[in-house]
Length: 121
Image (tube, rainbow, N blue to C red; front, side, top):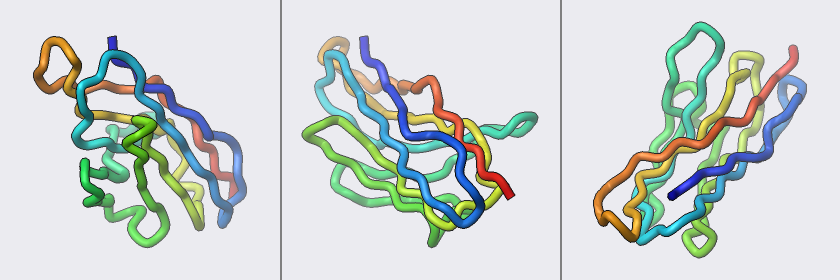
């Protein structure tokens, strides 16, 4: 069974920074895209950033220029460096991975439990 575990959330003042981490574990053959999503209370989950196997990235408009996504394939991990944080960044941040397990060898979308980021004004 493949699992994702996020860490690094917390309380930070506006203008501050946080670094989120997510590590995948289990019987993994490979991981394609890894992404960060976020969800604020009463709102839909939205894409924050994605990173593909060989380093290509995509960012949501709300975080462009402020957040940086990266990954370490050897560790099956993805990171999100968040800078210049704003109160509207407050949300539960979820790690997502497009995983090919050892068996069955077909794509599986896996979600982490989430880590809370709170940005105070």
